[in-house]
Amino acid sequence: MKRSKELKAMARMQLAGKFGTYIGAYALYFMISGVLSSLLGFFLVGTTTHTMMDGLPFRSIPQMIMYFIVSMIISLILSVFALGFNKMFLDGSRGYPVRFEDLFYGFRHHPDRVILVQFLVMLISLACIAPGYILMLCTVLMNLSFPLMIVGIILLVIGCIAVFYFSLSFSQAMFLLADYDDLSATQAMKESRKLMAGNKWKYFVLQLSFLGLLLLGVLSCYLGLLWILPYMTMTQTNFYRNITREI
Image (cartoon, rainbow, N blue to C red):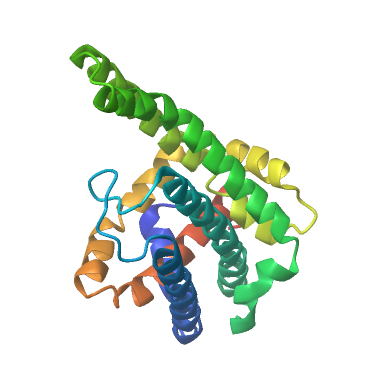
């Protein structure tokens, strides 16, 4: 296995002369995501000042449920762009020409696979955190005993740890789908688990090494992320190619 410094050094060389294409792709993605989020907020939340819970401006429970359902659908649709990004970065890392139109690659190559992977990951995450969250919510709304609140918090913490574990296990599924058109969603998830066996900590440390840069990107009114995200994604691409023994 190559060290994080080696993967990052490779990423900097691979990005030379291609930064403009990647920055443009991320900028367009953020614009599309922002427009969809704004439309969702405008039509399903509006400007009402009535709140069911602090910070949740919904007129009714059905409206809140509809908001979260539509949010999930939008998230699933936007996840298809991940396949396009992975295609672009895999091509760039291998020295192939990087095409801007490949941002929409996922929509032309079995988008159902990506949506299914994302949906299954959502279900697994929901199953992990639901017990603790529901118990905490019931404790607050029904004025149940304080010890139940503690149990709910413990379950929620355990659930979050489980979500983190599974997110690492399935982190390579999108790269696999971009690499193999004939790979199904479940096959990609299974193969990702195999690839990440013994590599989860290395990937976590690699992700953690970008924390300072991401903070700087946020402090720059998010504009810096347009340069940081391509660097980060190219490094992740090299990690994938490294654990598959391509490099």
